[in-house]
Image (cartoon, rainbow, N blue to C red; front, side, top):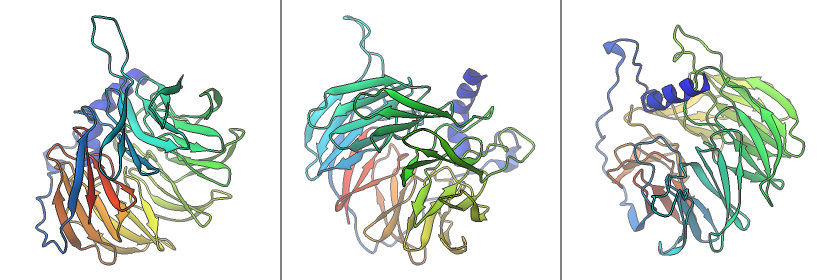
Length: 393
């Protein structure tokens, strides 16, 4: 069943993410909104660009760079990991994690997936082949590699001396930061059909908060791997398996003792960090990460509306609906603006006060899938073809 589920979801992931329903008739098939016309209030500038291997190609992958100490770390699906100078884009080192199969044979792809994480003196990345790699941040040499319980589709998270990895079969595992040894494993359960991807945990006060494919948010003690609480924020509903998908695929956000979490086909919910009790919830579904800033939650819903809601009760403050079904990335906050990318390779800059467009920029025709990241005074974007761009306002 697991193999059938994985293959099926692999074929349907792009369709599900774009909101298409294959089995509901022609009337339910959606089309991408035309590119909105924007009178730029400023002109974003590309400072440099650099290729990092072949990118993710036609595969769904959330590979995105990491930033630390004026350096960027980026990877492609095949196994190339590079360190770049954040100011100039100059390559500092390059490592190839593809699998050697023989002297006269081409290496097999490492199938890197999820995001790259930089923490301390290490760089971490997982793979669809159930591997997690730790590289030396100074020279790219391999510090350790560990086989985990399943595909490592989420971004590794480092906290309290461990590397937390959420695998495709619903296992949350803690690896020793020093040598990669598995310290503990918690089974978060997986329903028969899920979306492609997993929630990366967030950490607060010694706990790992993570979403599950079963519509629940769980809190786990980082030191012992003991479950503290579980709370359901999404109930499966609908006549078909696809309609009943209710993954909490997004990374929860913790602010001032409140956990904000978001489910596909489900709810945006605010939970008490200590007890997991639901403080309020709204019927908004998504598969992209949300961000919280200044008493507001910014998110992209299933149909690619960009929405701002109040943190106190989830009241909608504004809604930008001119980007429907453009397969938007998770939003980021950069220089006071919301920025999101789309599958045609455009960046859209949105005013946080009223949701109006302030700028638009074509970055790469290969398209954007992973969210941009903020690196000091620069916005870093990795296109699907592996090209990394540094942009300033």
